[in-house]
Image 1 (spheres, rainbow, N blue to C red):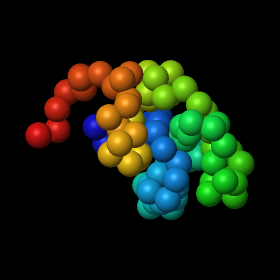
Image 2: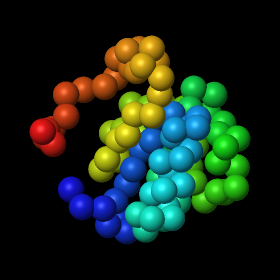
Image 3: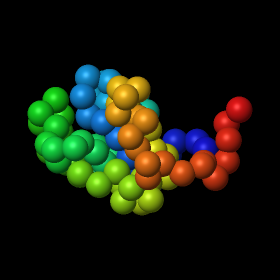
Image 4: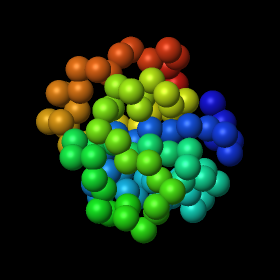
Length: 93
């Protein structure tokens, strides 16, 4: 899938890695902040406070269901707890 200005992206995890991915998507990928949802367990993303148009949510399953692309940017131990993750519709291997 090619990134377009209409691509909806969910980034699960908004710590250092998630915030860096989001910044790169906006700066280099041409994705508007309004098209990105950052998901955190607290519903707050202090590292992204300078991007008021960005949506921050707490429900990863809902964010992933509404997104065209979902990126998992959490520590390995947290990824193991993501029971809502389903088999991808298509593989990029």
